Amino acid sequence: MKKNLKILAIETSCDETSVAVIEDGRNVLSNVISSQISTHRVFGGVVPEIASRMHLESINHIIKASLEDAGLNFSDIDVVACTKGPGLIGALLVGISSAKALSLALDIPLVGVNHMEGHICANYLVHKDLEPPFGGLVVSGGHTYLVNVKDYNDIEIIGRTKDDAAGECFDKIARALGLPYPGGPEIDKRAKLGNKNAIDFPRPLIDDNSYDFSYSGLKTAVLNYLNQKNQKNKEIDINDVAASFQEAVLDVLVIKSIRMIKEYNMKKFIISGGVAANTSLKEKLQKECDKLGIELFYPTNIFCTDNAAMIGSAAYYNYINGKVSELDLKVYPNLELNE
Image (cartoon, rainbow, N blue to C red):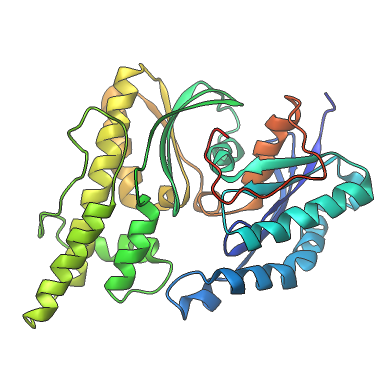
C-alpha cells in the first residue's frame, strides 16, 4: 500500500458542507467546514430543501479552499471519498455527485462512507495510537449506538435506539424551552446553572437487560411537565429543567456503557458523535472509567460534529481493505451503522 496516501473527502449529510484532505487515515492536512447554523436557526431546526441548495452553492468553493489549505493540487489526490448515508437525501446527493465527478475526471478511486462509521473514526484523528479492539458509544442527532469495534472494518452493534436518538431529544427539548438551534450545546450550558435533581424525569430502559435506548418517553415527560406548568401559569426554571433532563439522558448512556464494558471485558472505550461534545457526558463517563481502569477516548469538539476529516479517515480503512465504490453509487438516507 502506498505511503502518504491522500484522500479528498466530502461530507454533506445535513447542514455542514465540509471537505478535508486526509493522509494515511490519521493526518489532517485540511478540514474546511461551512456551517449553515445561522440560516436554519431562524426555523428552529434544519430545513432539508434549504440545506441542499446551500450545499450546492458552496461545494465547489469548499473543495478549492480545502486543497489550498493542504497546499495541494488535484493531481496530488489518490482517492476521493464522500458520505453515502445516513442523512438528508438532497444534501447527500450534492456531496456524492461532486465526488463522482472528481473520481471520473481525475481517474481515481471513489469510496462511499457510512457517516456513523466516520464518527467512530474521528477518534483516530486525535488519538494517533488508538487501534481496535475497543468499545464505543456513538451518540448523535439521528442515532445512538453501543458498539464493539473488533477491527477497523468489523463493528458489532450491541445496542441502539428504539425511537428518538439522544441528540434529537436534546434539540427538541431545547426548542420547547425557547433555546436556539442547535439545542445540544444550549442545554449543556444551561444545565451547569441548574439543579439536576430538581425534577425526577424518567430513565427509560435503564434497568432492563438489553443495551437498547429509548428517549421518546423522556421527551414526552419533559413536554408534559412544561405544558402543565404553562397551563397553571407557573414559572418554569429553564436551568433546572435543562439540568434534570440532561441528567436523565446521560444516566442511561453512562450506566449502559459501563455495563457493556464490564460484560465484554473491554479495556478501551470511545465516545463519538455530536453529543460527545457534551461536557457532562465526558465527565460522568471519565469518572466511571477511571474507577475501572479503562482508557477513555473522545475527539476534540471540531471532530465530534459533522466534518469531512472523519469521513476521510473511515475512507482510508475502507480503501486499504478493498472497499471501493462504483460510479453508480447511490445515497442511503436511512443507512445503519454496519450496512
